[in-house]
Each structure stands twice: as structure tokens, then as C-alpha cells.
Length: 503
Image 1 (cartoon, rainbow, N blue to C red):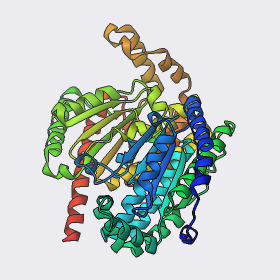
Image 2: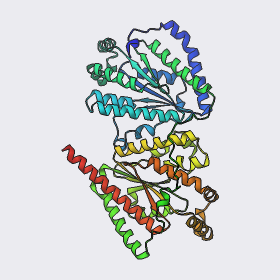
Image 3: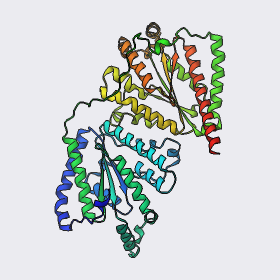
Image 4: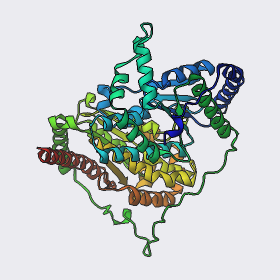
């Protein structure tokens, strides 16, 4: 895979200086058109051999183009903040907005290669990381991102010659970093695993570009031309409808009975039982959040449900058990301009809690397969694709020790009507009822169908849905707390079993 980048590509200085002005002008025009259109972000991944010109090339791009529209991100050793969260969190929060370019050093490929080369993990985990990179890039490209992946290459002979030349030059020997010497010792392994990664992850939507790095003129022109060609193709491409997504249909039910229909909406608690059970479960929950075993986990609770089903009341009863410093509540409404400028999952990734912390989402990423599906705010391809993206997202959280508990608070149509009317009649509840609530009620059947599909496609072993009978608010609040307690206790027990196996 690297043979063509070891044959000594050279561009003479005269040719280079003749071609750069036109290339630079064209890149600037494309960059400003990218910014003006604001249709998609550009992500440039910089990888390869140390000393092959990665830093010099990025520095040159900042000179050729407008650096105000370029965000250069370097991912070195993980910070404590990053170590306390899933690995992908550090990348998601740094993604550029539409109309901007992000250049990533030390990206997900650097992390997986360094880990494998230095024996931090073996092939199965490398394969897992490769699969994760493919899923991430496919998701970003499906959301419209344009990804360039560059591998800057030197042969082993070229690398050794560079190191010797710098070492013997008193004025430039400082340019040799410890990483240069380290990679000179592990070159063969690095190239071996690099070839494996490139072979597995070069796709039509995000291909790899291998650049020979020994000659700066050749290297610079090659990168500039690739960027220009890719940008122009994307900018000149007309905006088309989303392509069809092939998803196996859910079978039609002959009796039309769904999981929601199987709920017993008559379940109730009288006031005395409610107060006793509520206090018991709140005390139990407070103890679990303070338990030292929580240091290995974070907790995410997702609250979805019919309008007026009591999500806010349930959240308040959960919060009442805790010190406010232990949790955060993230209300999800229509996306802001900043959120619309990023991939859909970006707005949720940045709120994922660190280990030992607890976040409640009042509505969530499931909006794409619920309100956006029913109201037509996204294409059919978008919401069909979202089921798999959501399952992958929640699997990444679970792998990092995040306990995800998902609630659907269900009420029947008559109960919703009564609560709507009550909200209109009671002054301090009027803020809870809007025109949108009444419009959504008119689409009851469409929302019901979307909910059933959501549960069928995203209730998994690692992140199951809990359907809460919410006609009686007391019953619902206690069930929510009890479910959270059971989920945490189960997670603590799984961690203990895994610890015993390691020992």
C-alpha cells in the first residue's frame, strides 16, 4: 500500500513556485464558498510517519488559506476530563461546524496505532477500534461531512537519513523529538499496522491519500490539489434528496396490539403507600450515588413520553434525593443554530457525564425517531439510519461504564386530555400547555406508531427501555426511582464479577 510513496517523488522549485499562486487562490475561493454555503463541515485527519512533513504541511495550509476558518486540534495524552468519559467524547466535542474546516492531529487513528504498536492491547481490540472508526466516519459523512484522510509517508531508509542529517546539524538537531527516535525503533511494526488500518478503513466516502513526505514541494502541491479537487466536487454537487436506506420492515401485527397496549394503566398507589415508597427509593438512590463503586460509572437517565405524561414531575422526585452538585438536567428542545451546524449527535455527546456523575435528559436523541419523524423535520433516510446510530452511541457509553436507563412514560388519550384541560384552567400550570401540544395530540396514532418502532429497534440488552404506566403519577415516580436503583445495583454487580475474573 505504501510502495508508490517510497519511489522518490520530486517537484523542482521552479515548477512549485509557478503553480502555487493559482492553487492558493483556488483554495481560498473554495474555502470562502464553503463558508458562504454553510452546507457541510470539512474534517482533515493527519496521520503517518514522524518527520514526513505533517506539521509543516498544516502550517502551510494555514498560510495559503484563511486560518480564521480553520480549527487545528491536537489530541495528545488524554486529560483527566477525557479519561472520565467514553473515548469518542474528546473528538465529538471538537468537530467543526458547517462551513468550517477542522484539522485533527493525534486523531482516532493515531490512538489505535500507538496503542497496538506499543503493546497496550492486541489485535482484537485494534479490530474493534477500526470498526468504531468506520462507523464514526460513516455517520459523519451521512450527516454531510467531507472527510480527507492523509497518511504522510517515509521509507525506513528515508526516515533514518532524515534523523542522521538533523542529528549532525547543530542548528537543526533540536527538531528531533523523542517520538522521532521512538518511531525509528518501531518503524516496521508501525507500518505493518498502519497498512492494516488503511486497508480496512479506506472507503468511497472517506478514502485515504498516501503522500510521500521526503520532498516538501511535491508534498505540499499533492495535498493542496487533493483538498481543492475534493472541495470543488462537494461544493459544485447539487443538493439532492437523501438516498434510500434499506431497512428491514417491522412485521405488521394482525391483532394491532403493541407493547404500549400491554401496559396496565390501572396501576396506582394511594397517598400513604406513595410517600413511604418514594422516601425509601430516594434514600436508596442517594446511597447508591454516594457509593464508592460509582467511581467506575456514570449514570444517564433518558426521559421520553407522551405530552403531559409527568416527565418533569418524575425528574424532580429523582433530583430531590440528591445534592445538586451530583447531577445535571439537560432539557432538549428545538436545536439552536449552533446545534444545527453540527452532526445530529453532537449536541448530546457534549453533555455525557464524567464517571461518578449523573445526567438526566428531559427528551433526548430519540427526538429524531419521534418528533422529527412524525413532523417531517428530517428525511425518512435520516430517521431510519438513526436507529443504528443510536444503538452504536449507547453501546459506546456502556463500554465506557456509563449506565443508560431509558424511560417511556405512557398515558392514555383520555388522561392526556384531562391534564391538558387542567393546565389551561390553573394559572400556574398554563406555561406547560402550548399550541404544539394540541397539534401533537391530533397525531396521536402517528406518534404511537413511532414509539413502538423506537422501542422495538432500540431496546437492547445493554440499554433496554422501561415502559412506565403513568396514568397515576405516584406510581410512575416510584417506578422510575426503583428502576434507577435496580440498574445501578446490577451495574455494580457486573463490575464486581468482571473484577473477580481479572483476579
